[in-house]
Length: 95
Image (cartoon, rainbow, N blue to C red):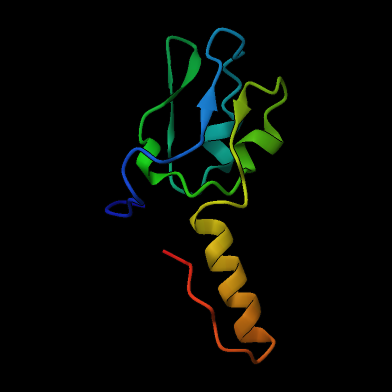
């Protein structure tokens, strides 16, 4: 998503490029195109676009990605949506 950044330099996303097999799964599942393939391996290109949803880490077949899912913007948005569905006033969070 172009033009959709979160706070600069706060993402918990980490990639162990030495172990990456270059399958591209992270590129496929990332909703904000945080990753690119370079020299046959994944690389983090746009870390400030990471909403810490955890899709990349959960789907990586060799577990080279880590992220503290549930602490970032995705968690805030999900909690806000859940509250509104239950008829409660949102408590903030989100992006």
